Amino acid sequence: MRGSDPLKSIHALAAELESAPWFTRCAGLLGGEEQREVEQYLCGLQLPAFRIERVSDWAGARATTQRADWSREWWDSEAREAGRLKSLAATRLGEVPLLAGLSELTEAAASLYEPAAMAAASAGVEDQVLIRVAAGAGAMAAHQMGLVLAAEAGADHALACKYRLFSGGRWLLGVMGECCYLF
Image 1 (cartoon, helix red, strand yellow):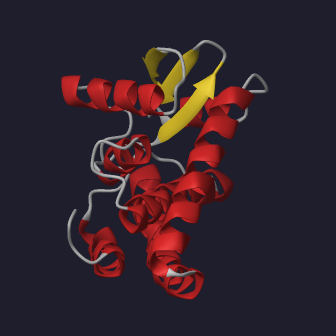
Image 2 (cartoon, rainbow, N blue to C red):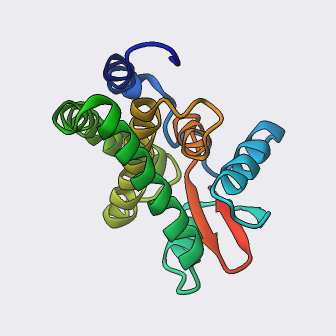
């Protein structure tokens, strides 16, 4: 999508959200490409090369999201980078067109509840709070990808890596302790 109109790229992203295999690979074994995506994500956020840990079930995902030792450095790095991209994109496109494009994307991302609920149900999980947390994390990844597109930051950007993990069926739970957790 690079080199095209960033607002059209955001519109296209919103249109294709429903066709991605959201949450369908959660609990599966990690592939080499997924490992590389997580490594590039961490490196792009200028974080240490944390050990990547696979979470093997929804109960483990719940427990991981509730850990008290989440990394403030990770959280702040991601927020700082999203803010930087938003500023670049607003300068390039204008605040109003950027917000209109991101609003369309946010509305489309509301559809992520259904695939999260379906994936959880297929594992016998009915925890509505956990399903909403998963869907919200996916929506955040989509929003951040919208910022990547709007700022024309490129496919190798850390937040593009995060989006590919989510839209490829995973849930990047984040950095807790000395590990980065992927479900």
